[in-house]
Image (cartoon, rainbow, N blue to C red; front, side, top):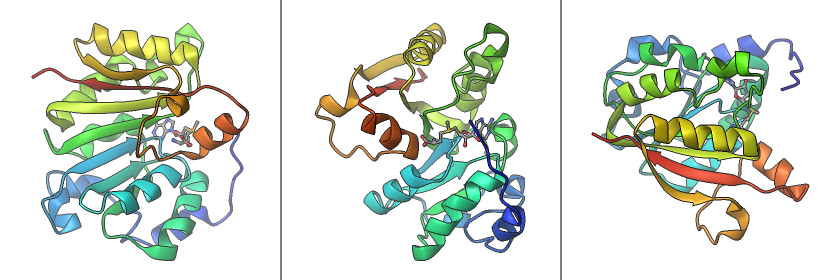
Length: 213
Ligand code: SAM
């Protein structure tokens, strides 16, 4: 992904600690208290500019959402939108997904979304793909029993790789779609990348994968 450095981004994020949670490891095991309720928690890894989670948080007020994005110059765009109408069920972390086990306790999360993640097409970069088995190991630990991953991408190669990775891990696959926007799915919230690719007429692939107990 091409990244434009935005001067002052880090400082802007730090000025809004109710939306961009600082030191998330301090809340490990305690996220329900952060949100002030017992509602389920859904996490998006590689959240980008936040369009998906902002839309989801409006559509599902009884679910708590946390987006993880490692680049401050990207996350600051999510902050600009989120602070216009601050929602109690939406928080972001300016962190690397590699460290996800330090943010969440075992079985603290109900669902993980992975949307249009970088495909890392070279074999030697396989371990960086957010659907690589090393990441699945971590997701399984923080998800509840039978926790789910909901995955969308425009990239056929990454989709095929991820289906194999999920099923190779013993997960069950559900609602596999090779053309999401013609599948009749209701309640789909588009991400920034999804909007961009679908405007170009590209197909969107989607699936849900469930860990077995
Ligand atoms: N999910 C958004 C969408 O669908 O529009 C953004 C997609 S963009 C291609 C992928 C995003 O994931 C980038 O903003 C990138 O910085 C972020 N990302 C990739 N690897 C990450 C990691 N290990 N930890 C946190 N963010 C990551």
